[in-house]
Length: 313
Image (cartoon, rainbow, N blue to C red):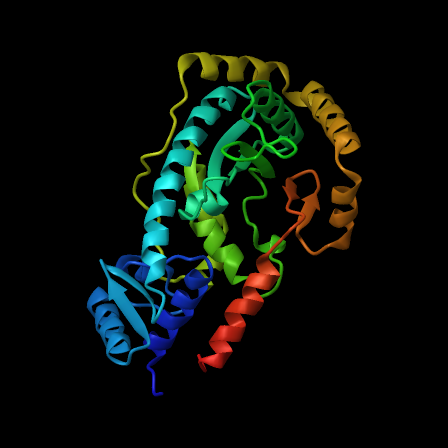
C-alpha cells in the first residue's frame, strides 16, 4: 500500500502507543509524532483522514487507533480515572518529603504518568537531588515514606510510592542510560513524566538537557503549566534550609559518604550484581541510582520494530 512519509510516521507512533493500550487524540499524535516535523495541524488531520479511508486506522470520540482496536478507548478512559486518583495520592505523599534537604524536584513516571495505571499499580517517583547529595536525599525520602506507610515494601505495592530512580542536578541528561541506540520507549517515557514538586522548574531543565529526545519527537512542546504541583510551605522550606546549611561543605560530604556506604550495604546483592552487567537496567553511582531489575525497554523496542517492519514502515 502506498503511504506518505507522514502517514508512515503516524503509524509508527500509533503502533508504539498500541503496545501500551493507549489510543491518541490528534493533538497527542502531533506532540509524539515519531521523527517527522509537522508545522500545520491541518496536514496531520488530512493524513489521519487518509489512513481512515484506507482502513488502516479508526477514530472514535476523538481517539485514533489501529483498526480493530476500538476496545482501547474504554481501557484508556478507565485507566485515566485510576491514574488521576493515584496522582492525588502522589501529591499527598510528596508533602511528607518536600522538606528533605537537597531535594530539588519530584516527577511521577511510568504507568501513573502515562495514564495507564491499573488498580494494583504502584506510583513511581523520579527524584532530582543536588550534586553530591543524592544518597542523603534517597535515605530520607525512603525513611519518611516508610514511616508513614507510603513506601512499597515486599508484596505491598498498590497505591504506594516506588523510589527506583534518582539523579542529581548534574546528571539530568539520560542519554547515557539508553538501553539501545534507538531507545524509543525511553524517549516517550521521559516526555510523559508529570512534575508534582518542582519549585525551581527543573522539568524545563530536564527536557532541555535531554535534547536527544527531539530526534524522536520534533513536534513536542512542553506544557506551559501543570495542575499537579505541590508548593513548598514555610515549615518545609525552613527545615530544608536549616539542614542544607548544616550539611554543606566537607561535613555534608562526610554525611553523604556515610549514607552511600550504608545504603550500598543494605542494597540487595542481586541489584549490585545487575549494576555490573552494564545494560543500564540497574545503575548505581554517585550521580544516578536506577533500580529497574525488570527493564522492559528492549522487549518493547523489539515488539514495536517487528510490527513496523511487518507494515513496511
